[in-house]
Image (tube, rainbow, N blue to C red; front, side):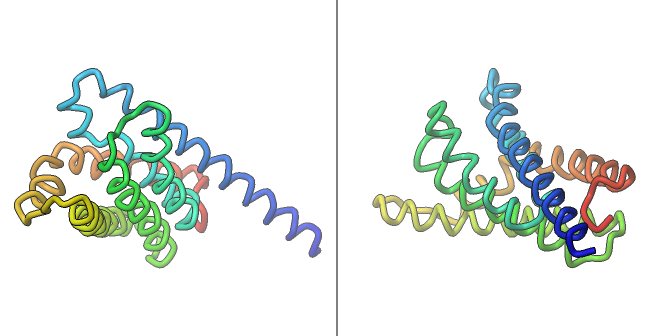
Amino acid sequence: MSFSASAQNRTRSVKKLVSAGLCLALCLVLPFLTGQIPQIGSALSPMHIPVLLCGFLCGWPYGLAVGFVAPLLRHVLFQMPPMPSALGMAFELAAYGAMTGLLYRLLPKKPLNVYVALILSMLAGRVVWGCAQMVILGVTGGAFTWKMFMAGAFINAVPGIVCHIVLIPIVVLALQKARLMPDA
């Protein structure tokens, strides 16, 4: 019996690792789809989608890791996003992945709670991004104002926010229905 449980845990871990790797790969590739028109690409925030999904699908440790690594790896490979933006994004996306994973695990598995977890995670990630930007710009001698925070986190991000609120729950609920989500 313990061998079977051990094999199931190993299988579950491998599935999570492969899913996290797929999410990381999507973080690298999706921006190319929207990157031809930079205003649209940055407004839709395509790297956020796989990170948010990773938190739901794989849990908070994987979501945190994929979220932190994705913008930094993408910067090293393609010089986008530029530094120091990539560093601020790393903290933001790490918060997204960790929060979606934690909230999905803690909240009852009801469709409404997918939205609750997503929206709370997006708010937390934006606060983390603002704090990271304040520290980064403080270290580099710049200033990060309330107006800059509101513009970067909310005003300029409205298309991405809408896209994520529409797309992510559809995917998560479809994965739940197919019994491909943990604890579904």
